[in-house]
Image (tube, rainbow over all chains, first blue to last red):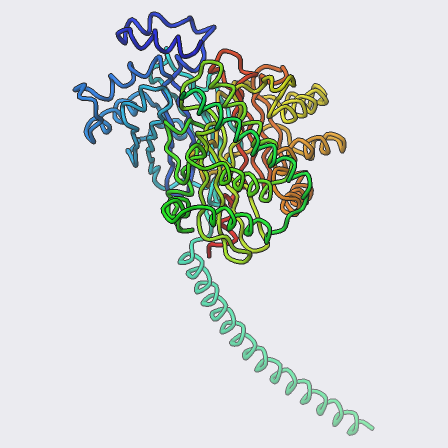
Length: 244
Length: 338
């Protein structure tokens, strides 16, 4: 049954093939473009790892966007161009500010494999958000790439750094949009820590010196007092003895 | 003539599989020596060219990761194709799997392979069926040094890493299409226990627990399927600490459908780890609240299991993908890397 559908759809030109597909309500993976995004958040970099699997009935349409010169191969330029096209359909914001995606890596199977509906395209983008402030952050994601034919997955990877903690994830029903809330608590910077230690040591030396000086003065004061008491004692003693 | 050859080889493999099953039942706890011995016995049955094709260097990461849910015509596997082996060699493979897996594990492998044969017979293409499964090794069979057995094809990726006293199946993929079929007058469901136990656990949740466990959107496939080695996702759903004692037992019993595919000692060690961490283990469900139609995931500090019904073929209860992983220990890396 599935094979029969595949054969019929394959004989049609791409546009007609799309029209020939059953309506979405009865759709299955033959006519779906699965776009699965995994978001790995690190202290200095965010990675979006996207796996794209065009089903056999949409493979020609997707391939048409990749193999632009229709020569049956996917050149480096063509793969980069498709990654750029996909990037334009992705909207990523960090704390409500749009961030720039940079293509980090991509892998495209042979066109013949994509045509079977089993091929998986892998595209990875990176975001360098600059210095993240300590506290809570929100990353929002929207995928507008080929929405009529696509189904989506959107997930946060468990952070590899203890400084990042995912606090919540939200998606819309078809997972074309999502939000990841996370806390960032940067570990203490060693140079800052060293500075604090030196400052505390210096403060301690100053305080100690001050205390020593004060104690010295106090000692002088005490000896003066003792001398005065002693003189007074002597005076009263002599006075009493003279009176007796 | 060709039909006759195919039929003969299929029957030969069936007989090998049944031999596998009975031998497994006779040896419920074969030790590491038995696994290495069975592997060496199989390797000894090969000629030099076959042996060179079957055994990879243990450090060959490309081969380590060369497995998939997809048919072998789409994702090429390394090693030896079952259809290219003699009956005696196939029997040796069956004996090896019986030694390296639990009786439940080798039975599941047999049923998944038979499902693929059923798919082929019911009008599928030549890329399906018994012959399209591959066996390979990374490293030499040993009771002390790390080595690996790989057996897989369409809907099957068994990766057994053995490192001295340790054994793991992570990552391994089990799937089925059709997930229910008739064989010799009996109904076979290769992933039937997984399906039934998960739905029983979901049904045991009260309304407040369901609100935590059920995601408000549909998961269309495995999140950490083939090609996602070493990755771990943020857990979601209901935490073990929010389940009753009975429900925690049900969760562990469900997970045992994957951990229990390993040999007895390894399965016990893994289950002991899971019991220790059950309060920190999550269960989540997505999609229709119907048996076999919803995606579910079990995720804890030491395991990640996903079950994803597929719509390809029209009925998601008849096409299932699952994955078993161990966070931070896919391929047992913590036992053999610095």
